[in-house]
Length: 315
Image (cartoon, rainbow, N blue to C red; front, top):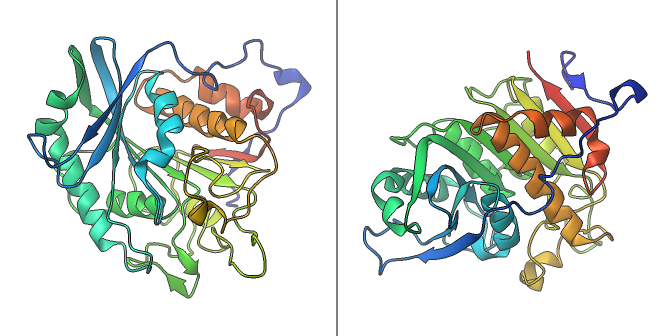
């Protein structure tokens, strides 16, 4: 890691007095809304919205799913984050088993972002309004590559994103076979991204499931390189004992989950851990509540899963 990285470790002098609550469901009841071509104004591609039911104005986060996956595989994660006061918008990209460049998904994500001002308010529960001046962008696996590519300007949007999350992002099969557009430069702090960034990795993503399948998050194109190329302010947290797809719902397709090495621990702990870290980051960046993220960075043992490494760079 860069020499300026501040590696956050627990010390006896920094024992926290308050245990963060972001790893538990929030106090808000949420509603799940499927939006497709039959609803007006029609989104460019189908989207799954999970939003608080209580009247109010809430920040918005777009969440982009991984390769050959579906947005509804992330329902527990989306529900958890929404229950803490965020409107989650998860587009459904066209799935193709043959990996191709990411240009179509990047363009589709940009179109969904541009649909939000006119389309999102009419889809929400009565009295619920989106605060689009507080808009975050997140993506898992290949969706992480899509999110970073959009943040880097590979498609234009009328809205401005205020925070970026890469959830075990992957940029291809290896250093010599990057997914197009090739956004990794292998130079530290080279991403021209002017917003706070969180990269969450998995400790087992770079390992093979067996001799028949390659790693789902290979070295040189996974979370470690994405973080290395981020500019401050940026945070980096790895769920040490879990795999690339362990944050998905239990009913996710076994056709996909069987190809990635998974952790032997409780998947609910992984989902709550990832969701809670994202809530803490979103609270700090678009919710202006810094306490939970600071708590996790100071004492990673407050999380339900082992976090190692945990890093944060301010400059």
